[in-house]
Length: 378
Image (cartoon, rainbow, N blue to C red):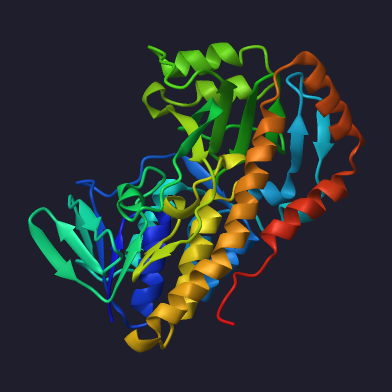
């Protein structure tokens, strides 16, 4: 079976590697001339690692990721550094952190040379016929997998797009260029309409992220200075993390998710995965994980399937993934609203409630998402 994958991000590379390991003829089209990732760090929870294992990719990803956070105190703090809630170590025991470029390189290493065709913008057929058009050239496949991200052009071509919603806040991200002592504490600090997150990476550098409620499209002449000024009075080691990050390494993007979940992930023999299918806010840390789950589910459903059984497999994929990803999309949106609360009364109430909630209860809620096995064939 010939399969085209459009997009060489995490979801696209994962499904390409999984399907190629199962013997399928896979071609990946990536519109960027150099398919290297733009990003900082990310976290992978147990569900993502289980899904990688199902595709035979887990061990190599573990080799470039770390679990330092499992031995740290983590949860939510206030800007002065007082803990609002600390979750049990079991909540993050299986959580792994990795630099996005390392994950991208590792997934790419599982592909045969020549699999990824960079600098090629691929378009699908509007009716879902498994055809890909690159410029004036059209290629026929048995299946097309669309993994071209949150602003997927192909989702629109297929008539599945529900539009994007601005979440109301922007996000900075960075990785320190040297180790920073974070005192055995990680997690997020929640203020009024802004937060700061700290995640240790395997080489003792720190991946950090920060958010602020701002109008979409707000511009700063110096992003590094903007984030330093905004969090200048917050607890240590926030300023230390920012000082250890090169100015050019600070990234910022406005946060969007899908306005509403899609009704289906398939059109004919074309299927959506990753952010193209269910772009969500980052508040639950499940964006990459759900894309990897998509890849594993599709890989398992297509295992030993011939073209006569393909339509049924794609229907199963859409049915299996729609409910789970829609639920997480909505929960992540709700979590974002809570974390980004700005009114003094609302923030005071939120902080009081967090202090009253047992950490083990918060941990149990998180684990229900993390520990769910990747769905496979029925």
